[in-house]
Amino acid sequence: MSAIYFLIPIAVALVGFAIWLFFWAVDNGQYDDLDSPAHSILFDDEDPQHKAGVAEADRADKDNDAKDEPRG
Image (cartoon, rainbow, N blue to C red; front, side, top):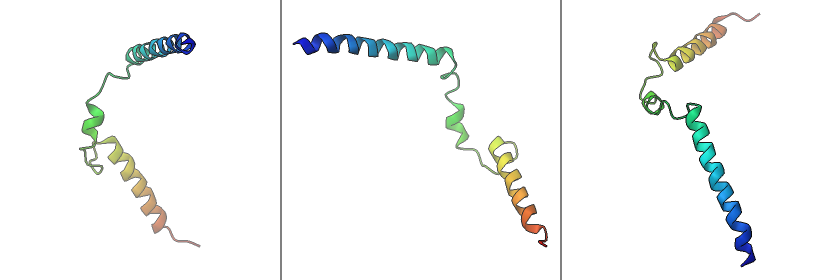
């Protein structure tokens, strides 16, 4: 029975912390854009308009240029 006097305040504190953490995340914009990450998986990485595609293409160009240079 004495354990309940110890566990109830800990549980209330954890719930209070979880509520505070949720409101902190909302205030800092963590839930502002929920649709873009879900749709970005549908984009082709080779699309020049897509940021990931541009970065991948740049890396591929640099790799190809490095392979084409003569060693010596």
